[in-house]
Image (cartoon, rainbow, N blue to C red; front, side, top):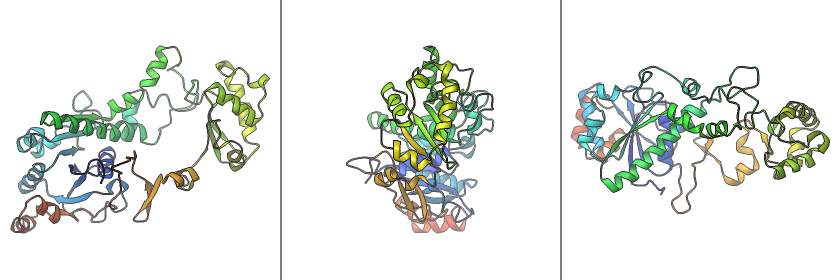
Length: 377
């Protein structure tokens, strides 16, 4: 039983960060019920990793009967996750105030890109846009080249899904004391801005030039914090920031003090990086792993996400699992007494409609009527 065993979460079906948040809550033991549309593709979520451990209820939210069904479910829930643009739930008749009337303790968690208010609140957007206005995207890339999107990890996942879970957990803790629910406004632009906290501090201390890329300590500017190509075309990563780790890098790579002695002289970084580029191309990735991996050089091979599950460190920690034939990350973080677990793979849309509603007090006759009216599948 995970640490959230006993909590019920209603997740209005969406994409990206909201389903990720629901996945994490389900891993932690919450009963997460995804509210899907009726008439959808039955196998839509079967290979979707974020659907693991969730149940599915298919409702027609354009029908008053579907709205009433959802509100009765709200009475039995602790959290509802809203992945829509601001105002959509209100137009449907399932906004926060309506839900609070049914359940004053409900946590109404809203996941958007731009937030619930502001000049961009109703505009469409994606991860790349949200991280653009926080300075995160500007900082990523090589000198003299355009910024490089870091997949959709910074806005959607780190700034969105993780922020959503953080807000929900804090809301549940507060509700346990106050007995009152509240609305959580989790915006990806806010989360991405929070993820940039360190660089605001670095810039204020004169340790970062925000106008440049590949010119600073952690953006690939430093020769001791970057990736290098090996003789076989594979790559390795080096993060030898601290002096003792840098000294070990010099020892393992055969670097002379004359050429690599002044570690933090940024004016020398380009030429030292060029020399390291030549050196790392002299051995294969496997040879560099044999020489440096597991030492305090701060070294790792650069792996694709399909290679990562086979790395010995990931195997030893069971960092990846396989569910219904799909390799995926295992639940995290790890709890000593109430471990998280994946209870099932993705379920078909509407697969659990009758069972979930029955468990929430809907009579068999009501379920027949709802199905006959097209409210549920």
